[in-house]
Image (cartoon, rainbow, N blue to C red; front, side, top):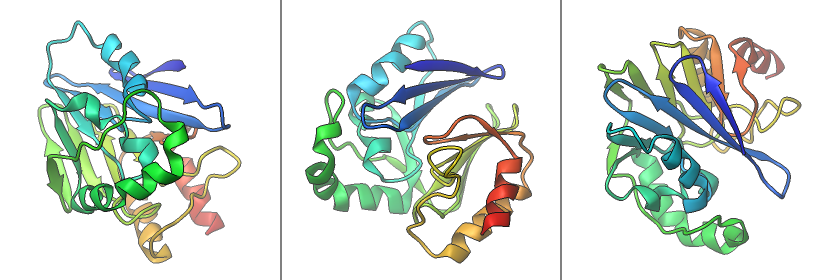
Length: 214
């Protein structure tokens, strides 16, 4: 596992899986809350993050960026926390859980149990104390959301960027026009650092590059 600082209050935990791709879990240590973006493959994905913030007395807010199994299987480690997702994400985790487990159970990393988001939204949520904004950004999936740290000008777009630097266009499971609209929305935002679910840390120019290819 690789641990990287992102500016002053972000930390990126990256797991290189045995089947060949990286998986990122993003921690933002705000003034009021610690925000954990995605929960990986199970309890063992989460243990290093909990260890990292063990001396903090700030409540944890978990954010599921979309319903896919490699982003939500660790939710069970946060049953006393707020877990945020888009409304569609909660519905899709619940409806597709058994299918995801049947197809991918060999990738479970520690304990895995279904624990659904307990705070859902449709367009946007904002935490003004920490300048954390969560917005609906369909693209990779219809339920995809992004998290903007407005204080540090860092955005987490999850899987709306592809899995590695050579494949920056993700698999798109919704209308292509919706994805392009999301990319254009990113272009209007004030950030200079881009975190995603599997890729390396990138700059804003990656959005321009994806648009130019599309």
